[in-house]
Length: 186
Image (cartoon, rainbow, N blue to C red; front, side):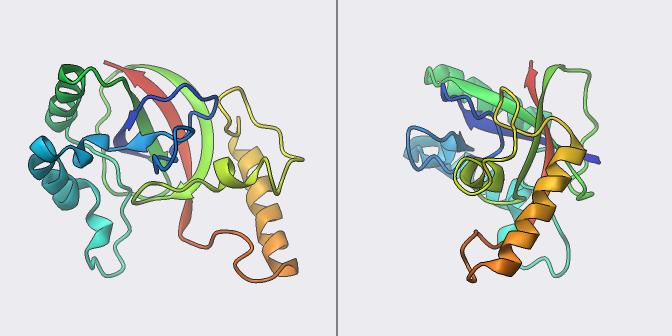
């Protein structure tokens, strides 16, 4: 897997600690949350659009993971979050997608597990949204994620089989990728 970079996520006190960051309810985290603050969104959102969320533009066949590989931006982001007393967490993302590339410093980190989510945007997670309701036979770790790559591959195979035997769009469709996630501490 390739180390792609960091995703800054607004802290929530829920057991799921994966990449899903839509922030649509208090039960989900929000990725890149400062983009919603009008007094700073010009800077943070424009940087996000140009350097992190590049997938919104036509990149041809280029595949990209919406993670930041620029530590100076990450430090600015967390300083602003701390100035506003916003609790956050930092996710180190690894995928099979080669870009962006991140020369990862030696962070203190905790392995969280494997997720299956969109590589861009709010990183909608099939694991978070489907396991409790559609695939309860799969056991997740204490972070609400798969503990091993082998376990998540079994889930992906079961998901593909389910799609063959159920009406279209019963499950979310999209360009899902496997994420190996760590929470890091600076």
